[in-house]
Image 1 (spheres, rainbow, N blue to C red):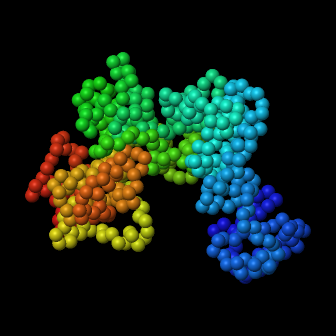
Image 2 (cartoon, rainbow, N blue to C red; image 1 turned 60 degrees about the horizontal axis):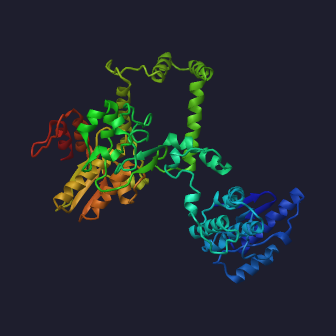
Image 3 (cartoon, rainbow, N blue to C red; image 1 turned 120 degrees about the horizontal axis):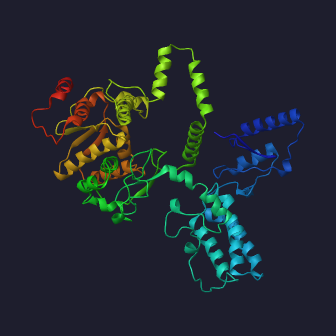
Length: 519
């Protein structure tokens, strides 16, 4: 709860609208005056009450504090002090400021170039301060744009003259490309320079999540699921100039033979690992440093700090030497120090068989998957206790299907793919009264909350939600790893299979012990 806010020589104090709290506040202010020697100017002070406060209570509190009520605090430090429901009326002062400034220019003989400078440097800067903290209503933004457009084409914006180009086209710096590919230009404004300063950061963190592939260039755009390098490294072929990703897709599936033939092994493997949505969706730009794929100021600031720290460590051998010098001074057994050094230098063989760094990464993913499953964060402690540690048979008349996924860079995506395949199987056979169990809480929560992140994982969840709308008595629920052991063991063992396997009444040998334990 916020109790106070201090702004320069003014203060906002918050308290409950009761006589007891009013008297306590009076005592606090008197004590402050006695200790500091500063006296509160009650004539310049004001009280603002919520709408639910009774008039009798208001008068009593004003009498105790000897301060008058002020229904509308108005504008303070250039911002509205209180935000109500009528946003248009609240931000009317912004529109009025822009209007007054344009009216002052109308009497002057300005060329179109002069008007452009006035609009860019003065008019557009007026709402910027408020927009740093608060969203302006869209209709208010349209009114301001209309005023500026009218002033540009005619000295009298009240007169309906011909406007030879819409404001949206005039104000675009990158008409034929996205912001990520926009250039500074020959004569940019200071505002455009300021906006473009963040382009490098966005380029480092933004990538395309593939759905239809119609918006994404095969060469030049970042779209591969590889955080170290999302670009295609296969040499560009002249015959494929300007080719889009959708030309690699046939009937909702990757054209594997074509991809294997035209791209290097690394690129082909990454392309084929991208899950495609079952229904028609648009490609989306995702942010690498947020689980939902959405850019926030916090994630952008954190990413920028990481980039700068990494660059400083790489560029400075002195810093690196300092880190190693401090490491060797740590009081710990030498074998632990040696192990830390080998891990940092990536020279730690496993079973004497690892010959490539990719094998190190794969083994790390295997261990990380086990760790994440074992330490899955549940909503509350009560929720944790409510799940059984052993597989439970479904209610009479119901069928239970257990789902799990093998190791994958995005463990949520492979689990979601498993759930989607099960729902598709149910939909094709028009089945009902089925419980789908998975040990991935992230998938279950996304389906229950109907949350579709701005990533490939979100596309898969959207497919699941679409199918669930047409299914009757089908539930997707969470199960502990120990209650999903058979599906987990089968998923882990599937990596050794070279082709599709289907079992009927005789289960595979790798899950026999799990089935005995469950039964």
